[in-house]
Each structure stands twice: as structure tokens, then as C-alpha cells.
Image (tube, rainbow, N blue to C red):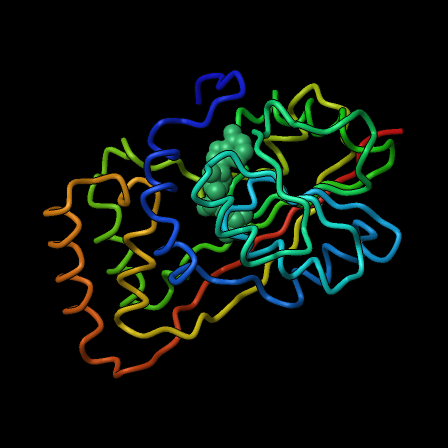
Length: 259
Ligand SMILES: C[S@@+](CC[C@H](N)C(=O)[O-])C[C@H]1O[C@@H](n2cnc3c(N)ncnc32)[C@H](O)[C@@H]1O
């Protein structure tokens, strides 16, 4: 990606602001074992201050609150922030980007990034995160990706990625080894560790359509194109019944800021 200089890419900004409602309705939460691991490894709990960066509508943010930690959430898209404030009223919600964080030096004990690090200028963001993290503090990244080992999910993914040139899509979990990527950068973080798990999102046809239409590069496409895609998705899941599970592979990475 090109350096962002503290800006959100236009495709992301347009997509996420157009799709905030669909996003909240259609996107998955995160598996308890993965969140538990992050909270243990990053010591997120009473007395700690955690920054959930690129918090969106607060899908991960809301899972951090019960730990007893003080939760700060940064999100650059106004429509997402509005949802975030309503969904997680106890969190302090701030406007900002990963490359330009609105927080003082060494002011948080941990940083989490859910389903968003692939949008960042990785090196600029890691330097900025290192700045706001206290020395020894932890960084955790998490992604859900549709589990295409199930044939209907593979077909769903094929439909969603109709633009095979990848023009509108920023690749992440399955295509990118973030541990190797981060370890290869000149940034003050210790070795990156990884944990793989799975998640099943309870689903129905309407929610699945909302899920797909909330994908950033689809949310910003013309209405007629979005409607055609919605019809194809309904056809695909017609035999699965009124409710079914959408399976995901979940990947978690974590590391520590060097002291
Ligand atoms: C797929 S959503 C993930 C939201 C939330 N973390 C979740 O788990 O549902 C990606 C989020 O990253 C935000 N984002 C994109 N580029 C960003 C950047 N450079 N700095 C901070 N946030 C960014 C978007 O506004 C969007 O809310």
C-alpha cells in the first residue's frame, strides 16, 4: 500500500461509512479462546489501559470491557464512531488513524487491532503504536477469514471477489504472514507469535447479504451491482435453511514493544 500519511484510503472510508449499519449487523464477533489469549498475553485487565485501534462499530471493543481494563477506542470514520459510542458507552471513543494516534507517549498498556491492520501503512502504524505503548506493552492483531474448506463458503468467496484483479480488495490473513512481515520491519517490537483457531457465526440469508454488502470495497459499489450480488448470494444459500453457521478461520498475532 502507498503511505497514507494519517489518512484512511478512500475506498475504505467510503465503504465503511456507507456500510456502518450493515457492518454492525453482518460482521462476526471473535472467538472466546482468541480474545482470552489476547487478554492473557497482553495483560488486559483491571488497572490496565487498552487501546482498540480501528475499532469500527466496536465488535472487539465490547469484548474488552468485561476484563475490567480501561478501554480507549480510536476510529477514523464518523459513522462507525457513532455506532461505537452507542454500542460501547463505557469506552472513550476518539477520532484518529493508526498512522496518527490522538494519544500521548507511553499512555497505554496494550493495543489491539481487529480485522484492520491490513488497511494500515504497517511501518508508520507500528512506529506510532510503539510511541503510545508503554515499554514492554503488548500489541495484538486478530482477523476472521471465511473458512473456504466448506464448498458453499468457497463459492461465496468466489462471488464476493468478483474482481479477480483484486483492485478493490486488500489481502490479509490467508495470503499474508504478518509475523514475518512485522519481524522484517525496523520497528521496536519483539518476535511476533501466532495462534490459529476457528469461529462459527450464527447466520441467516438476510444477515449474510448484509455481511457481504458491508465489505468495504462492495459497500462503495453502485446499487445495481450490489443488488445483483445479493440475488446470487440468496440463491447460493437457498438450500441451507432459515438459519445456518458461517465458519471462519481466526488468526491471532501478538508481540511486545521492546523495553
Ligand atoms: C473491517 S473494519 C474492523 C472494525 C472492528 N475492529 C471490528 O473488528 O469489527 C476496519 C476498520 O479499520 C478502519 N481503518 C481503516 N484504515 C485505518 C487507518 N489507517 N487507521 C485507523 N483505522 C483505519 C476503518 O474505518 C474500519 O472501521
